[in-house]
Length: 239
Ligand SMILES: [Ca+2]
Ligand SMILES: [Ca+2]
Image 1 (cartoon, rainbow, N blue to C red):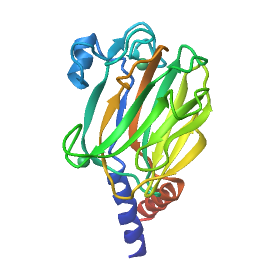
Image 2 (image 1 turned 60 degrees about the vertical axis):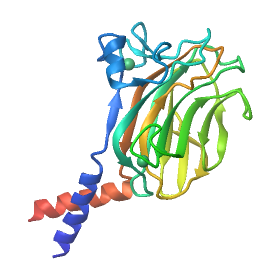
Image 3 (image 1 turned 180 degrees about the vertical axis):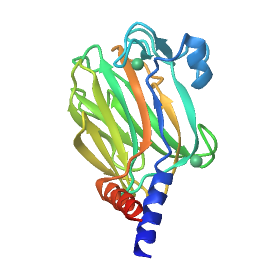
Image 4 (image 1 turned 120 degrees about the vertical axis):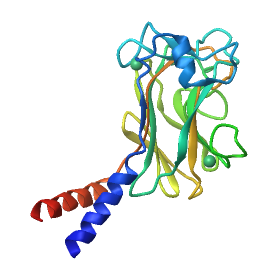
């Protein structure tokens, strides 16, 4: 009976862990193919698929600084409501590259958002977590992040021109903010607010060219949950 209980717990984790989305942007043959997946918020000034460089293989997303970049923004609905817990954080992360780490006027980021409805701009915006760089109210020598209903904009670590991995681990009532898997900030957040879409690009003016790659949205079991999974597997084998 105890084995069955453990097995049941383990299976419930397996089911909940299936909410994954990953895009390396390498599969799109052209801009039109990219636009079929991501909805351009300003169709006449689209967020660009860059087919000349990337972190993974040869393609990435480029909001095309340093020239006028007042638009170039797109979104994608995740198709369901996602939330993280302490046991199973919802992970939002991607690779990010600045062409210039010195210039203060650098405003680009990706966001994960939650609306009262089922996707982008459907009802009221409930929460927004951004990762990237911004130019006011922060230390502009650093990567930045924003938790709208938490710490607001915060500083992470010193900017470079290398590819870096920016990550947000969304837990029950906190958001942990990482650069290259190093934790730099923890913000509070309202528990129970779910996420339903991602927004790519700031849509704001900037003077620095940036690239984004390997966008990942995933529910990750923490080690305690993995231990339960292992116990469940063991129980199965012993049966
Ligand atoms: Ca890529
Ligand atoms: Ca929603």
